[in-house]
Length: 200
Length: 126
Image (cartoon, rainbow over all chains, first blue to last red; front, side):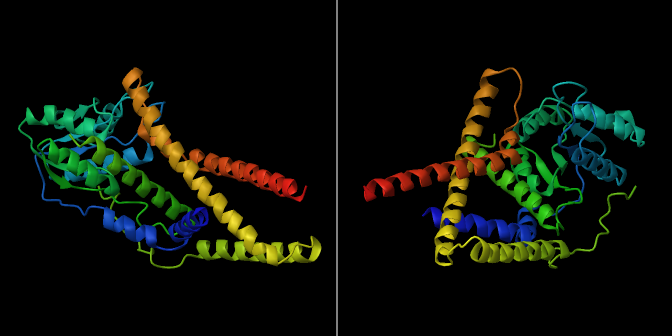
């Protein structure tokens, strides 16, 4: 039994690192963009360093949201993202970035309450339903989008997925493919957790 | 503002130089280790199959440790969220160090199991 388990684990490692299996699985799990527009562009939290510097993913997602706003997909953009243990919140830093890139301040909203995908969906429902914004263009990782869309739909939103370009989608080196596999496993664990505890 | 437009050439279906090089390196050093083992250290070829089986068992034990560590991590994080004022992300249980340390646990546990088998066979001889 242990040998079978070990053999399967080794096989999975080689398949993940040395074949395009993880790329193919990533394509199946990722949502394709739906850029028909909405009442608001929502950019979910993606991480901020303790010194207030946005993570690489956070910057990519913020820039993608800003680009979609400049294309006219929604009248305003909402940045989500909590504060770390010290320093400013991710949402506020992203707002500053948007304003530096020419988005008028009155077109930018922030919300720092949600710390999980479910938490963001519930918190943004309070913020956006007051403005009668029910159709959102949702910006987050392609892998995360499926679960995020489900969480937002469960609280009453109509969701148009808008993933930014996925730097891991074309992972070609073993290290990059293992990183992609790890992200896929993380998302699968998150799905199991939400399936057990509920999306609402 | 088109800085995020995707102009990359898709290469995910092509066997990469990096992957092939790594496999080549491992192949060379594995073959060298086999030659050194047989010629210099006097290891028996017949014992190699059993050794490979033990290695697979060790990997299986490492996976079990990883699953248990991850599940326990989930429980600890959710408990901390309920009791402590600071928020703890569930993503901490996907840290790479947990996988590495699970491997170390497996190696130690398998070595310990191996010592018991050695003790049992010497008891049997008596």
